[in-house]
Structures are given as structure tokens and as C-alpha cells.
Image: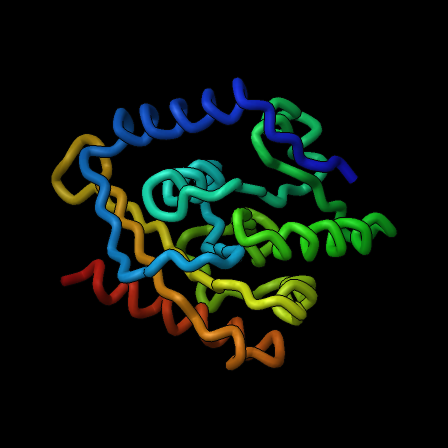
Length: 203
């Protein structure tokens, strides 16, 4: 696996790139959240429907959590974007022996209260119209942690309405990790949250 590094120049560059590009490409950005940041590591999981998603997670970290961000990426994608490794991205290779190493590495990330782990349990980019979302089972290895973590769901929804540039709406909610014992529990919880987000978008 490719482990994450945090080189200040690249971290600062990605943060600036993220903020400027989101401001440039979207007519309006709103964050709908009642999250209270705690002195705990954060597991931030969201829907995966566009190449923007990693930058969306980074944007939320800049605006809300302000922690050291780690992003799990498919190894074949990270190899072609190695500079992201210098700003906190690390790899997972599905079906390979190194998956165990990646899971253990991820658990260690979630042992530090200053860290935020961003991941997309769908495992691949899918159409934004995909519903309900199905998660890879590996997420449960991170949920079953011996240390307390703050589990946060987020959804990024994009609409053009009558604008040339689209509007970007973020929705965030905290979920009690103690209520999750199976993969179905977290899938159902996220899908209900995602459904509520879509309903809010219509209002």
C-alpha cells in the first residue's frame, strides 16, 4: 500500500486549490450542519458520485473540523495522482493481501484525536441517481474500534436551477456509532440520511 504523507507545501496548496476551485465553479455553497466538533478522531463518510468528492471532504475539514486529513483512495487512482499522497491520501487495493495492512493503517489513524479519515464506502464512483447506496464490508472493520470516534455522514448535492454555475449544498449529521453492529445498520442509517437530504433539497 501507499501510505500518506503530510508535506506542508502540498497540504497548503491543496487547501488553497480546494477553496478557490469550489468558489469559482459553484454559484453558491451552503453547509447544513449542526455538528459539534469533539476532541475525538473523525470518520467522515459520504456519497461518491464525482471526482470532486475528495475535495468536498477537504473543504468540510477546512470549514468545520480543522483536523489532519487522511483520504482513502483506490491504489490505481492514487498512482496516477501521486501528489495527493503528499497531502494525506493513502491507498487501498481491493482483493489484495495489502487490504489487511490498509485496514490496520486506517485503524491507527482513528486512534489519534487530531485526525480525520475521509472515505467513501461505496468503493467506486457511481451515478448520483444510485439509490440505495451499497457499502463495501471493510467499513465495519473501522466501526469496530476500541477507541471512541466521531462518526459523521455527509452528502454533497449539486443543482443548477436557473444558474449557469451549479449550487453546491452540503448536509452533515453525526451518527451514534453504538447503534451500528452490522453492515446493514450503517447502510440503512446512511441511506435514510441521504433520502432526507434529497427531500430537503426540494424545499
